[in-house]
Length: 438
Ligand SMILES: *Cc1c(COP(=O)(O)O)cnc(C)c1O
Image (tube, rainbow, N blue to C red; front, side):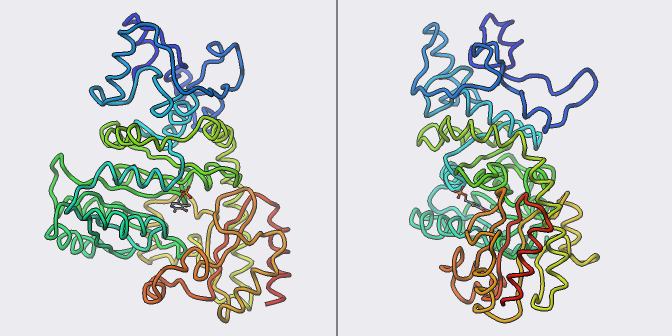
């Protein structure tokens, strides 16, 4: 997108918002946390309103026919980077654009798009990239709906897939890519890290190097796409390790209050362009009200994730020493010297607040723990202000075949926990009384 000064110089006043405010104060570079309070919005353009109004309109009035033409050049992709002005609410809107500008700041991404859900972000991205006969290479396991999308829905369109386990080495990833390339054009390399619910990390740098080793360095390389919902954007920023597109379910940590469903895709303008064109065509953009809620959420993103991360460490330390707990699958407890620990130190700034508790026993013991927790609510999802616990084998991963469950360690005694921003001693007291009843 052109910035305001450029637009003014070309005689085109920008009406929708301040396009790109400064990210510095003199020589001082501002932190994204600070910029969440004002970046990309000029109150003077909205009656002085401190906060952006919610723009409830389906269409926008052009000042001239020439403006309309120029804006459509952005919509149709004649010029990359999206429309210069507002056109129609299936393509863009002020609330969504301010949100996209602010999301991009956290990862120094050139461009960002917001979607009606994490899954619509993932589906729109795949739809933009695949053709019949293509192969998708992906890490495993993936979020269950993503696995269904790839195997069943894209499968119906003549797209096949090959996967490698999260944590695979570069040589193992290369081997899978070679087999995939022999089956057809590789349309995308799709990753999810850490894998849910086992927290196994994917080595994005090894994936990048494997792609270069197998497919060379041309322009037509399949993009490396990564679902960064569990650790991003505070604890992991995989564009730095070589990912081309980063995907979020904003429903989780970014939304952070368990009160909305949304998604996003971040990356370079070139990598985003086909995804933007597809979103424009099918209308998977988020609505202005949800975008506004997310702007509010972003103001406290770092505060919330910092607190949740500190809480999770304390709760995990308590759980690790409990006699009824076999093991805690928490990134903060990775064995120094292990491959997973090496990936962690190269890729992550924090261990997150979502982990697994493997209780001694089986489903009965796991269910007793879940049924006796009082503060920690029994619900799927994660990343909210409140702590949640669930049973992947019987709930989110129920449809996963038994052999695959065993392969990925999704056992009957595994409870997944997402820690929120409560007081840590209260959370520990809750686990203490619930474990006493197991
Ligand atoms: C929740 C989730 C999704 C799907 O997001 P929705 O917003 O529910 O569509 C995708 N990936 C991961 C890792 C998730 O946790």
